[in-house]
Each structure stands twice: as structure tokens, then as C-alpha cells.
Amino acid sequence: MTKSAAEFDRWYADRIESPLADELVRRMLGLPPGLQSTSLLSGAGLDEVVTALGLRAGQVLLDLACGRGGYGLEIARRSGCRLVGLDFSAVAIEHAQRQAQARGLADRADFRVGELTRTGLSTASVDAVLIVDSIQFAEPKLDALRECRRALLPGGRIVVTCWEARDATDERLSPKLRQVDLRRQLSRAGFVNVEVTDKPAWRLAEQALWEKALTIDAGGDLAMQSMQEEANRVLAAFDGLRRVLATASGPPAAEMTVRSSA
Image 1 (cartoon, rainbow, N blue to C red):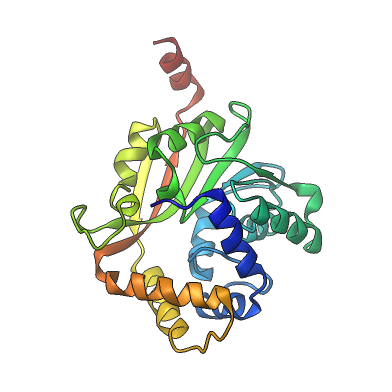
Image 2: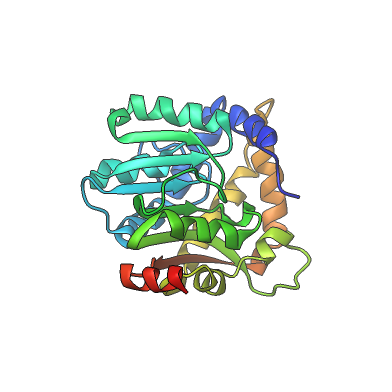
């Protein structure tokens, strides 16, 4: 079952109050100092994402389902791009806004409440889109990817990190993850130059994080308790998922004109 915005608000509120959980994730995933993650993209994975996006100063990145904004803010710091971050959790967006202020990026970061399938952005208004470990929550997923294509400038880049089932009939896995097929879905959404790459090293970093989390005395820390519950669920079916990085481009302007007039 997909969590509601209110459930994510509570989850983020617990995480914000847990420096223990943040420190563990940052250390085990090798994240830069100050980056507050609520997903599982490692520091090495972030480096690959930055390269795949290929952003330049002044360009606009849409960080969709941005959570607390950690990855998008780090990419903005490295590349000089402008950032638009959207998440349906108001608590996450409020925290992302505070982080932008704290990191001196408030003049280049605009965080808003929004949804994967309805961004509220103008057509052809961003140079690149990033979705970190969240496309599985979109209902339906194809609508979210089509919304990304609509918001992208012609030829713009999309980068998606997620997991895909090794066997879509594996009932140990959640239905929302079993439905992820990025090569097919990005192509059906109208993207071109679609590439989906296995990232086993990212997966090993995740496994080490989950195993380490289970060795910690959570006490009354709600975020650590939640992390341990998730660790038990994830590790029980760990062999059923593969970790992937998907990249694609929006069609060039001439092709978009042909499609819209067809």
C-alpha cells in the first residue's frame, strides 16, 4: 500500500529529530558532509548521477519527490544549476527550504509541495529531471514520466534511480516495485536514448547499511525503529531486486512538433 502524504509527514518528522539515523546513513553510504538523505543513493551513486545529468551553471534541475532536498542541493552546489524541488510532504519541503538557507543556496533553490504526476510547472521549463528512488510511488507511473517529459525542454535529460524486480511475479516484493520497468516505461512515455544500467555496487552499500542498522540499539528513537523494521523487510527479499540507474532524453523539438500535430 502506498503511504499518504500525512504518513510521510510523520516519517519525515521522526527522521528530522533523529541525528542517529542521519549519521548512520551518511557514514554507511559515503555521503558528503551535511547531505541529509531520505533515500538510498550512495555518494558514489551521486557522483554518477551528476555526470549523467551533465548540468551547467544557470540551467534548471527539477528534483521530483525531492524529500528533504539533500541530493538536489548538492547537485546545485557542484554544478551551479538552479533547483526546483517538489515533494508531496509539506514537512519535507519545509525542511528542504531550511537546508537551502543553511547551505547558502536559497537564491538558487525553489522548493514546493507537488506530486509526481502533477508538477504544476510550465511546459518545456526545465533542463533536466531527477527522480531518486521514488518513481515506484507514482500512480500511475507512466503519467509521472509523461509529466516529466512535458516539463523538460526539447532534448533535456531525465535520470531515475530505483529498483526493479528480477521476477515480476515474486510476491515477496511490494506490488509497486514489481511494476517498475524503466526501459519500457520511459520509452512509452516518449523518451529517447533510454539506457538502464545495473548498479550492483550500490546494492552492496545498501545491504551493509541495513545490516548495520539492525545492530544498533534504537531505544526510543522512532526513526531508527522504522529503519530497523524496513531493514528486516528488505533483507528478507534482498535477492529479488536489482539496483538500476536509468537515463533518457526528451525528444528534440522537431520530433515534439510532429507528435503534437499528429
